[in-house]
Length: 339
Length: 283
Ligand SMILES: Nc1ncnc2c1ncn2[C@@H]1O[C@H](COP(=O)(O)OP(=O)(O)OP(=O)(O)O)[C@@H](O)[C@H]1O
Ligand SMILES: [Mg+2]
Image (cartoon, rainbow over all chains, first blue to last red; front, side, top):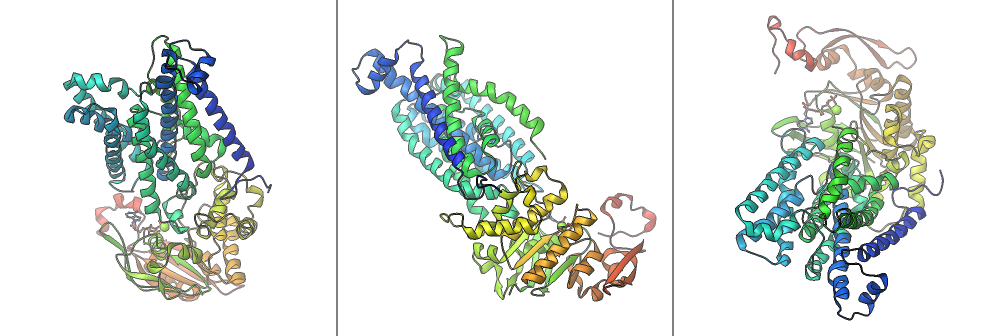
């Protein structure tokens, strides 16, 4: 047995170093994201916009469009990836993802309904409706998935999630068909986009996402144990009901916060934890922080790609993640799901 | 220390009681074998003893204290359970699995200690898993996998060990290996061991106490000689068997040779064939 083997609580130098490297990569892609856009703005101007702001149009673009956009992508990507990882660990279901299980659709429907029925037009109140919608959808999908004999199984949970997503999305579409004004307001948001978010909205979602991330990291070790199965975890002295409740709260905060910011962005929570597991193994103490960074990197890159592919047009980032996530989903169904 | 007993323990899933008003005493510092047909409630009872299943009535006791009154972590330091057919997450290494056995010794802040390291190394050593420690559990054979899980339970360092079918899926050699291991843990370290086994000859040979369950009730309990008899086999398993005495040790050996007429016990798959002419319907 070598000293570099990592296990329950000993930290591995290689994995710690990897986190620092990932942080560096994240910084690099954020810089790329701020540099590239519809308007050609040189690196020197970007630097000046950040550190000696003069109010010119170019500086304004950097400060109010590009920087918030990159930061939103960081927050949303990190949140969704961590939410997905927590869900996969707690439910022992490789297909768990806030998008696939209907939690993002719940948040989205709540926001659209709020805009339609209450005539709420400021993005700022999205957050609270998104959270409530996410929580409600989480409760419903869990109840549906565990109804009937045999308790909660990956297959039942996935099917319930798909059904719930379909139902909620068609309700959302229904509202939008009835009401063009709502459609105009939320159209781009609904496709999942990190563009045009102001700092105010970000500041509102930020504390929720931070609490969610912190909670997730604290839960890491417990999620690893719970991923051995309910009976084993309880036999080891874990109060699994509490861990599950805390995990659900974390997922709702992260997924709700992410949807409030960017609309429903699919597949990040599905793809990233699997990719991360490939490199760091099955210990959630490592999976969670790596997922946060990798999710952020992935979404920033997806957003940059969405801007470049059809220039000068832009593809919403949700479309980009679906392009990557769809094939990956098929791969998972084909190879990874054991019933 | 490590005395387990139950008082009017009633365990149920949904509405149906699987075990009703059960009183049993598991002898301290001994190996107890739990035997009985499929679906008679062995796993259910074990889960009830380990606090994995909340009783509908009554309680189980460890050293005179109701297990439901004990702090979760404390119980987990005294009583370990290996559920039937556990499944490890894909990619988890043996070593990481065994290290999970130290969970009850860690709060929010404790660091990994020398004691943890020793317990894990010892568990790997006793189960002969040292060479496989870095292999993923899902890439092992059934027998190796079973030993990995047992190693996890050993790392928990509990004075009571409950194991649900630890020898199922193993070949003859590895079955004996596991049974020897359990008896050694009992003889050398005084641990109380309760295991569910289907092989009655193993139960007779490797345990001090045998409990035969049928339909959630204790039909017989006592030494192997007292429990492994043709009457009990007929009543519990619905088989006719010769009972011999092992020439070396004198423990009973059973050789089943026929199914009883009018047996209450029937293989589930036969139910659909229960032809009308037998005239016997068991519900
Ligand atoms: N989760 C559950 N929900 C509902 N009923 C259950 C559940 N688990 C077991 N049962 C039922 O309880 C009864 C006892 O099951 P148990 O698993 O305790 O049997 P067992 O003696 O361990 O059988 P085996 O030898 O096949 O492992 C069976 O009739 C079974 O169908
Ligand atoms: Mg069983």
